[in-house]
Length: 296
Image 1 (cartoon, rainbow, N blue to C red):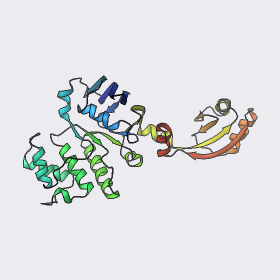
Image 2: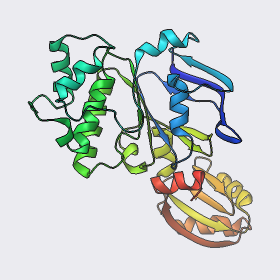
Image 3: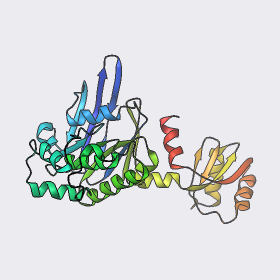
Image 4: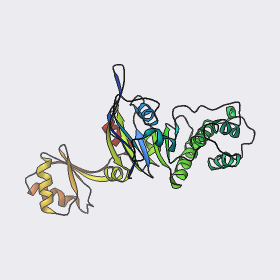
C-alpha cells in the first residue's frame, strides 16, 4: 500500500457553491503531505470529507487501501479548525475527558503529555496556556488511540515563531515514529520546511501534486536566455552540447547545467541563427512557484 489516502473525483457542493471540485488526492504512507492553498480554497472541506464530518455528492475515498471508511477512520487522529479544549481544566484533565471516547490509562496519558512537551505544566489551567501550548495539547488529544495518520488543519496558524518551531519539531518527531501527516496551511515557507509532498489547491481543485524533491529541482538556480525563438534555441543548444540540461518557458530557455562561459552559449546561438535578447542567472523562489500556480 503506497497511498494511505486516495480520493477519486471527490466533489462537495453547498448550494450553488462547489467547495471541493473533482479532487483526486494521493497521500503516501510515512510522508508529510502539505496541502497548500489560500483561505477559502477548500482545504478544510476536503479534510472534513476524509474524516466523515461532511458527505460528498460524488467521488470515492480510499483509506489505508480500503473503501470500508468507518473501519479505517479509527486509525486517524485529527485537529480541524480551532482546538476544542476545556480551558478550566489542566492538560491531564483534558486528556482524561477525551479518553472517555478512546480509553487510555493515566500512564498512557502522561506519556502523551511528555511526548508533546507538556509533562511539566502541573496544575496550570489550559486557559492560561499560550496558543502554541494549546496546539500541542490538541495534537496530544488527536494522538489518543495511537493513530497511524494525523490530519491537521492549519496547526501553526496564528502562532509566534517559538510556537511554530515547537509544533514543527513535534510533527517531525512524530513522523519519525511512523505517523503519516496530512497538513493544510497557507504559510508556504513553514510547510516547506517539513513536507515531503505537496498538493496545491485553489477554488476547490487540486492544481498540482508535487514531491519535495521535484519542487527543489524546479526552484533551483538556472541560467535564463531570452530569444526570438526558444524552441529553435533549445535545438541549437542540444546540437551544440547533447548533454546540456535545458527547457523552454515562453520565449526563454532555462539552462540548469553548470555554465562555465556564457559567451560560448551566446556564440552557439548566434551561429545557429537565433537572436539573443538577454542572458542572466536566475532562480525561482519557493513562494513564487506556488503563487504562479495558485494565482496571486
